[in-house]
Image (cartoon, rainbow, N blue to C red):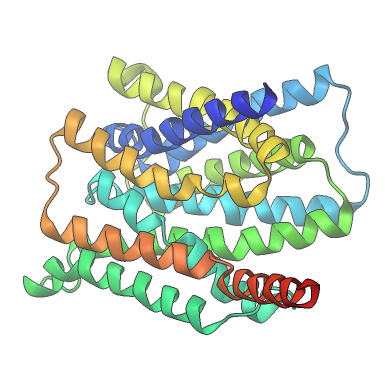
Length: 318
């Protein structure tokens, strides 16, 4: 029964995270990107710290662990969330989800150079190249129009930057969890709190370099307020709790399959709710990226070696 419940939660998680791009797209119409981030992570931080209080958990006493978790909160949440929201000012929500899906490919490349047990294989290299080809296809309309530094391309580069942040700091967080043995709920509470503080700083610092200034929440429309509230409560706080439950029941490798489903949900919602166009570039680019991700993460050689071992064992018995 727990496995069935975990797969149901997996489906819910795909829908929830897939809708995040739609909600961010709605939010940035009236709020600056950093304020969208502060709203969602601030609400999630309150929820996570309440969980800590109710379950009588505490933050680590080791200042080095606290520093590492703060870095993860800034690099894996505050900065990429803001880059995604900033990119969605000019990039459609469906396109954003597809570009952001390249995160596992970046993570694979980074892990190859930083983790001894995560080496690249020829199949994985081909998957990486295929995914980057998908990115080229998705951004090709900007190059075709000669708009090399236009708002669309700069937004797409911001989204790629967010994916790179996720990849770098996901690898860093794996090392931190192993080194300090921090519980997932404690890690989430600390990183969300650090992210909220970082987003608050960005919210007032970015206007100094020309970005929009934060606005009063009382001046926002109902749709934008609801999008911010939903992003914080459902898409960040509750989604993280679901994520950890699914990992515990299905394992990390199966849970990461959500990467393949989220862009499909986001593109569908963008088309249905916001009237975003699904053209041949989006279809081809999506197929290249998702195929590349699958190849980059497949354990082809382990599967082949296992089959050879079974064949040898069968011959020995015969």
